[in-house]
Image (cartoon, rainbow, N blue to C red):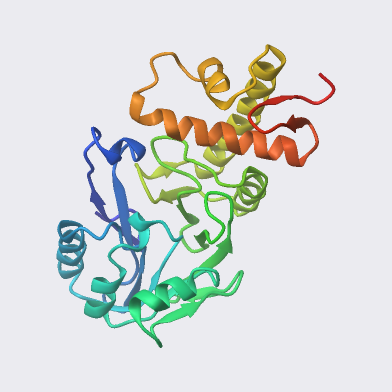
Length: 277
């Protein structure tokens, strides 16, 4: 599927009754550049053979262009799982955050993985490039990529197409959202879900959503909740699917971690309470 003049995608659907519940709308693997010149690939999907086959079939549809680099957004298995097989076929370097390089080098061997520099522009054919934006929060080795030519942001898991994602460090994540908002993208190409129109507005929505969730957590604490499970019960819908409860709990923990770091909440061994309460 061609998305813009320089952006192409193969969309991998996932079973919503299993781990696909975490990725409404499936997974997207992007080819960026000019198929008649050269391109880069953004992420490599799960290690499943069927996923790799779909990506390589789409690569063949594009005419097997020269791939100058595989760009990785972060270290989660659904983004690096196919890196070894795709790299072998495409015979190109794999570029990633410096923190991820040792893990990928161990997996792919020496001389294949290259560290990105913050704000580095990676050439992608037809005179265009993708700027690497270090965007920790979802994971500490997360990188988003911005293409000025088409005003497209490749957001990895920092922004999703059909849902909000999980966060490891909320303070870092909020800073990353602000950095992404400064790029003023028209279009967001997420790691999962549908492509997002009005990209800058979606980033602002994410910022507002997180701020609103923080207020809900504080309200739950003020109302007597003191454990993560009690906060989840007050903040999330009563009919929340069972396989999403752990993700909800992780999100609550990240909010609590930020609030503790800011001195607005005090933590004991097993519970939390509003500071001064």
